Length: 190
Image (tube, rainbow, N blue to C red; front, side):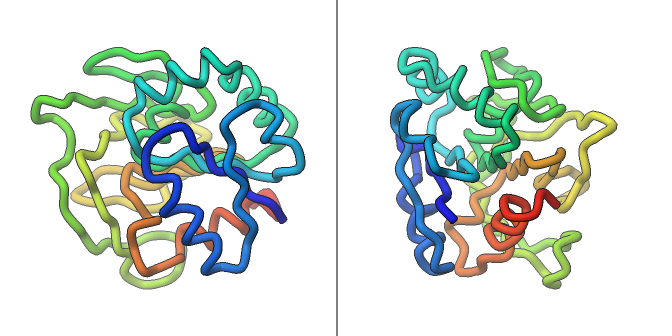
């Protein structure tokens, strides 16, 4: 099974290292043709406006939407969550609109401070380590979205069909719980 990792900007190498630890082949995706042969795609953290600009310029925005339409699994972390959201606020930003969530972000204090937290999740592994780095906030979830983990009363890990979104960075944790869940989602669709 090959998992694509959007390698435009941000922490894609940490995701690649996590996949290697799980004995899964990670493929760096920088152009639409790189999506061929992958069953899932990770959209990493970084700077979402820079990433979205690159996606548009390279035609990857359309290619990712088509990939999702063909049943490809997607996993967005931090900036990747912003890219996958239906709507982005504070300030508004274009996104791919593949997850029925509203994300708020603001570089001037409304984003979650950088820290490591422990929290419970529906993934069944007890406490889940969550590394937040100026994280966006999931302000609203649609009816078809399952909240898998919360922190301080807010959804931080959600799933809609084959789309998984985390406002934190599971690739920066020694735990592989979230990546394991995503790999099962990519294989089985649930």
